Image (cartoon, rainbow, N blue to C red; front, side, top):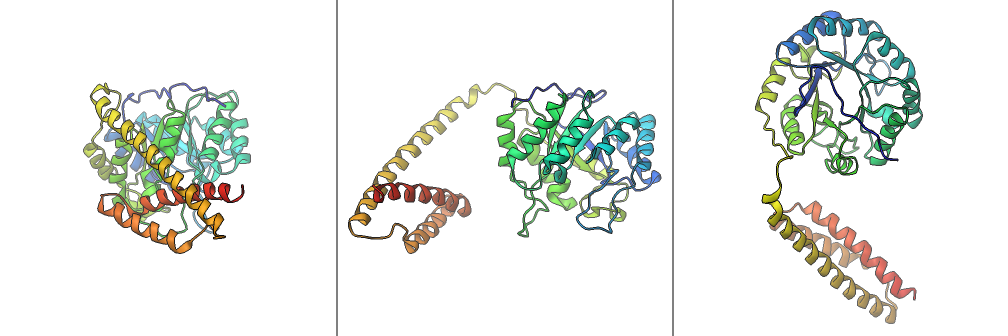
Length: 355
């Protein structure tokens, strides 16, 4: 299904990178919301965010202030002129937000992973013209992400955007959620007209990682940022460690280097030609390697040898990983490349043996 999209067209928001959405993880009290909102508005923020309903991993935590917080969002809009945005996870959330005049909705990662929930939201939005941003699912599944966008688009909503908030991992890493930048990059390749926002707060999980993640997103051509900003982050009722003050956010944005990618690429043509030449050489070398593998397959068949030689395979991975590191490439990257090459080599040898 091809998405039918229109520009986000956000009133009062300049059409330049980055579009910034900022505000606390959760709306906690009216005083906290208004204090943060005025601080952000005074520093140029045009779109305010705050979680009204908060999905928590375990019961017992703060799950959002609920409908009462929508009145505070309305007050933010009236007093500051900012657009206001929040997350929805059910049809009831949608109805309450529309009734309160919320300007932008987003669908959270847990909800995106549930097609039934996304369809419920899509059905509740039929006939409504409102920007909807869809976060990536918690697991690294591009098709699930695109599927959620298609469901919302299928309900007639054309002002859509995506939010990259990273992907869950069982392993402990520096990030709360692994960026896996290749996934939003592939999303951009598949749907080039779709605006993509980066959520550095949820990717990093620590406020000191927000700035470098914002810069990475800009370097990759992302259209916007959605950043958690709180008037007193250390006292936040949810996700305290990943929120920054409005002053710190302003400092981060001031330091951003914005490289526009829409300029002429003529100066890159020679370098791209070199890339094409290298790619052709890689294909030729791989074809030669596979011919040798097929000869090995013939030898193994004639001598009743098993295809998989574990010792040899481990030797190749270790050696090539070390060689890659010496050449300025990540050893894990090289190992992944040779794992794929080995898989194809085994397949080709299987064809020889099974003839």
